[in-house]
Amino acid sequence: MADRDTIAAIATAPGSGGVGIIRLSGPDARRVGESITGRPLRPRHAHHATFRGGQGEVLDDGIALYFAAPASYTGEDVVELQGHGGRAVLQSVLSRCLELGARMARPGEFSERAFLEGRLDLAQAEAVADLIAAGDARAARAARRALDGEFSTRVESIAQGLLEVRVHVEAAIDFADEPLDTLGGGPLRSRMEELDRGLAALLAAAERGRRLRDGLHAVIVGPPNAGKSSLLNALAGRERAIVTDVAGTTRDLLQEQVHVEGVELTLVDTAGLREGGDEIEREGMRRARGELARADLALVVLDARDPESGIAAVVDSIEGVPATLVVHNKADLLPRRPVDAAADGPVLVSARSGEGLDTLRAALARAVTGTEGVAAEAAGGEFTARARHVEALREAASELGQARQWLASEQLELAAEALRLAHDALGAITGRVDADTLLGHIFSTFCVGK
Ligand SMILES: Nc1nc2c(ncn2[C@@H]2O[C@H](COP(=O)(O)OP(=O)(O)O)[C@@H](O)[C@H]2O)c(=O)[nH]1
Ligand SMILES: [Mg+2]
Image (cartoon, rainbow, N blue to C red; front, top):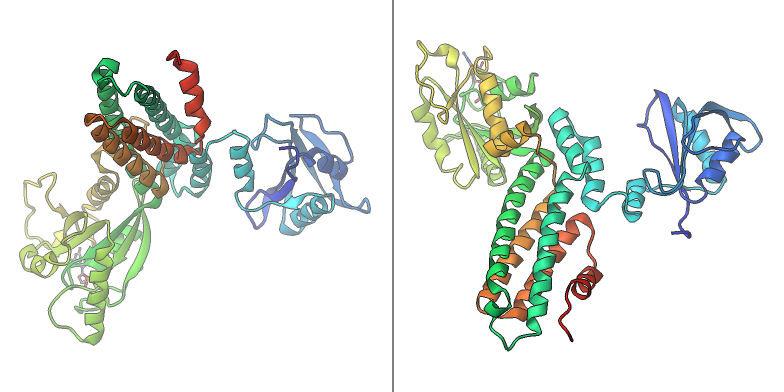
């Protein structure tokens, strides 16, 4: 790593703030920091210093911190110059760093170096970005757990199990004349079954983690005038959509990001679905149906006074949407309330009075992460994940399934290959793939006398 260059960037958000931080990482970080401050920098010591330009002119003053490799975020020498949080000031200090030989960092390059130096694995590095982007406390907690390695540890533990199974299978190949059962086939099979179950559980958790990170695409549908736009406004907490008592008011799609109980939702308001309408309205309905094709959830809004008549127009278009949540709106207009609200029945709300909205929010949050997600959050075991992770886990699960089939028909070489692919898929999540691991294990743990 000695040939790596030194990078610099403004680490604080653009705009003005009380404090602004310039971060340097790399072999020259200390030299650059010492030139700017004109004083030696001791590791892990806060130095009050004047930051100076090339002519000795004062650019700013503040605190300089030096973290000696490997005990730093990136694992390299790191210097932080904390000055005043103004753009011009920070820019002038940054320019001085570049004059002294540092290079502008690319986005994410500090975390990339942390990964390359083994300070973080890939899933953790991704969690850093997710933590910064987290829109609320629940998503932030989940990203924090992924960053702490909760997800990576579970991946690693299954990868370790796969490794042991691979070692066993590879060794058995050398004794191909003997039946597998005399070579420990029974325990091997049950071990693989156990790994299969572990992988399925981890996949489900990662799937929830992905929804928690990416949010959920929920499309509001229903007949005209049921109060779809009013409900969007009520959930968004602002008058986003135009509401009138003229049927066919909403024609275009309207999107709004909404947070419910820590989960991010993209709510899409659509034109009411009904027969007829003018050309614009029909185009609106066409768009509504198109939007439903990529929805995770259909939020079906019906008039509580007459839910049955509205549902007919909607029922065909929500076919194929993975989840549906039915809402009966305008509860305030009901002469009397139904007494038995079933837990999984329609949610009764009034977009006008706000009644029932909390129940609706809870139902939406459950729809995103499922009841397991709510339990996982309560147990403090939720973590964020990305589509890439979910894909890799799926691939690992499918290869492991293949391997079990090959093993059942005693096709050891094919089983070994499928296990290798499963193992590689898991390795891609944390970025810790190396062929030598297997070789190392085979030679260190087995003595087959050959
Ligand atoms: N009383 C009452 N009226 C509502 C409620 N929600 C919507 N409305 C009214 O119903 C009409 C249609 O509402 P809108 O949101 O435009 O319905 P959309 O066509 O489904 O989008 C408007 O006059 C709203 O003020 C509600 O909960 N209670
Ligand atoms: Mg509308």
